[in-house]
Length: 335
Image (cartoon, rainbow, N blue to C red; front, side, top):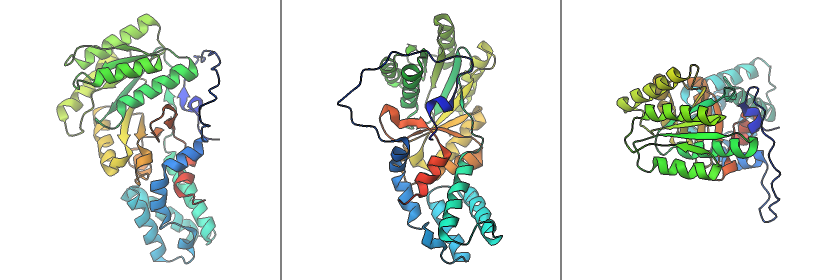
């Protein structure tokens, strides 16, 4: 079974509220299964890989076999370090007779290894505190604010949780408006201030409002910043310190939004953000528009930060929990 939102969320002792039944929408098209949607979204990455990685690749096992496998994984942006680990492990197991020297068997084991890597440090999204504070970071254009809105929608509509959004991105003129639109769409509340206001103050006010209103979750949007902007990265650390001072132990979850189409540059962004603030997980967006799906593996191995959510389209249901097994199969399954 694919990982569900219920699987990826740690709500602690808080029981989801019972929601009224929704009227059936007879005109809505039938939703595809979760795996089918994921497989479709990874079509570009899969085509890039399966041109090189097919069962026939392993018909003859020699140095060229492993070189071609390396090239395919690097082309998919799995990264040199991750690729070396994968190929070395698989080659060793085949040479030792632990994996039969058969194309289908070797490819099946490759899928297992990729799933194991993708599951590195896997952990749920911690929303167990009351209120739970989720801090969202990332570079402009990665889908950060949209991801916040979709998370809020799922928490509200599927779990009945009350959500408050904090518009601490006070630099971009349209940021608060965009977040307000998502607040209205998802049924969440919002705390915002004037353009240019102190982001730490907005974060402080958001948590105060969440406590006063009895909100279950407060999601704080921070200014999209380039990882090369040291002054803004320092400010991100300041926002976190303000949150920690007001509510010890918070933020309880810090996620970074990464655009999958940026490949290794996204990895470098995450490295820079991790130096400015502790990161608990990644929201990997735009996975449907890239042949660089291997970046998921690089993030897990080189940063030790788990991918928790993936964006595979524009619809609300297209932001979904990351499932390592489904990912590995969707990446290499030719059928």
